[in-house]
Image 1 (cartoon, rainbow, N blue to C red):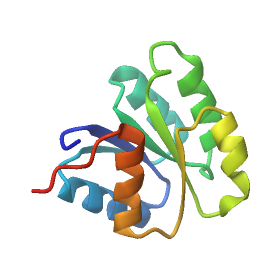
Image 2 (image 1 turned 120 degrees about the horizontal axis):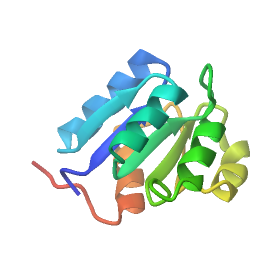
Image 3 (image 1 turned 30 degrees about the horizontal axis):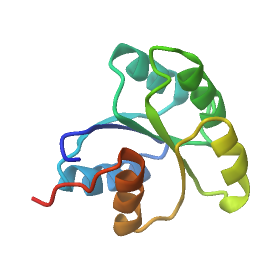
Image 4 (image 1 turned 30 degrees about the vertical axis):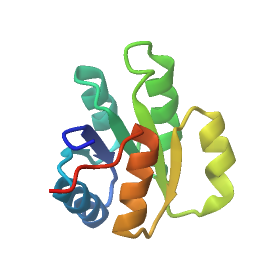
Length: 127
């Protein structure tokens, strides 16, 4: 689904850049936020198709951001994939809170793209 708009919410600049490079290389339109407050501002101003949301950030944590996105009728349909380094133990809770997917770091580019494909429902265009 090249051209889909994806917001990467990650407080670690290197991880954000790695994700951006993989996704831009497949034709996705990427924006970034370094914390939960900036993420909510961006989602509310212009809802993307998909948000990659880090759970562990300073300020508003990912769980709070997810809850606010899903509770607002204007943004409730935005797909959210939780990204975390804590492993699989938080998967069930994140999905119960409304996440559309759960993705663990570190990641492979192929796994990242397969997760996007699964959540958005179509394979990314190869360019």
